[in-house]
Amino acid sequence: MNIEWVDGFEIKAVSQNGEIVISANREGLLSLAKHLTALADAEPGNHIHYDVFNSLENGSSGLIIVKTN
Image (cartoon, rainbow, N blue to C red; front, side, top):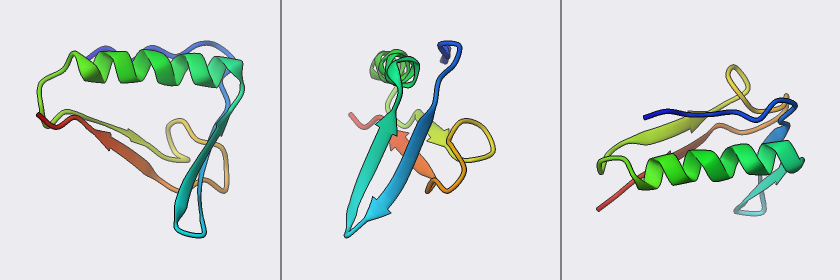
C-alpha cells in the first residue's frame, strides 16, 4: 500500500471524553484523504498506524485505522 504525504502536514489525534478528535491543517487533511483512499483499495486486514514517532504532533494519542471486509 502506497502512503503519500503532502508536504507541511500537521495532524493531531487526542481522546477527549470518550471521543477521538482529529485536527489537521489543509496538508494534513489532504494526506489523510490520500491514506484513506489507499486503504479503501487495499485488502481487508491492512491498516495504517499513526503515532508521534511517525506522523502525529506531540501530545497525540496513537491511532490505527483498519480496513475490514
